[in-house]
Length: 305
Image 1 (tube, one colour):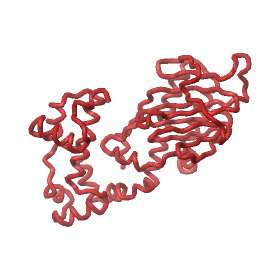
Image 2: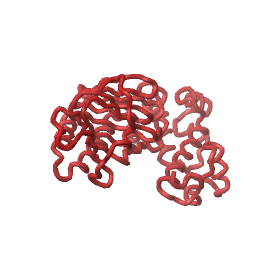
Image 3: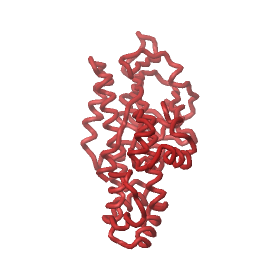
Image 4: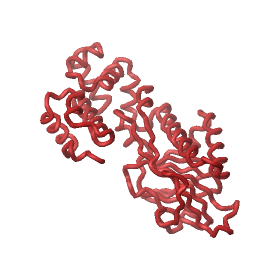
């Protein structure tokens, strides 16, 4: 579990400080590949997801949508919405904009105040867990078990309200910390419906195999040498692995390699030859065939993704 969280990364792509007078409706999340974070510094409002589910959000609360998607923040659940990009914004820093939906001389302490962030969320080699997370994850469910989050939320409230020098950068870092804390709380509570993954990671012998594969994905992994890591016969290991993870050991290794390859090529700009070598393929052609078979795309298509 610690190795899983060690690979977790939130990269804030863009943030908005929003001061708005009710009634309002703001739509977010046109890009489904990005996580979305919202912190309510003042006021109470509602979050409505794409399927129409409505959540009440209180002042001082934070919410993470790990898979993003279209959703809205509203002063009333029945409000119609404008996209967040339709509002006039003033740049506070390279990644943070200020949106004030009121005349400058009319903004007041009763306006709703929100800090929102669009993030790239990466769980590294354990990325499949993202698809198993709830659509909406609220920080309020963690405070009883993790009271240390409260001072961070209080600091966010002070920063977003006071707009002191450098507040935009501080807020973006605090948003990343709160988002990571929400995910950690979910993992520590058993990962919800992702029970198979958690069982695999917590099984001392099976977890040892998975850790070894993640540490050295380019090794020539076979069912036989993975069974040796577990200390069992090949048949017992293969059956146990399939029961717990829902896939065969070799399929797991291949999918792990292709996820890593996508990150190394698309995010880090690594050459295809180098990726093929790091992942244990004898040639670029062999790697490219495996990559296209699993992802449906050529490795070169990942450039700039």
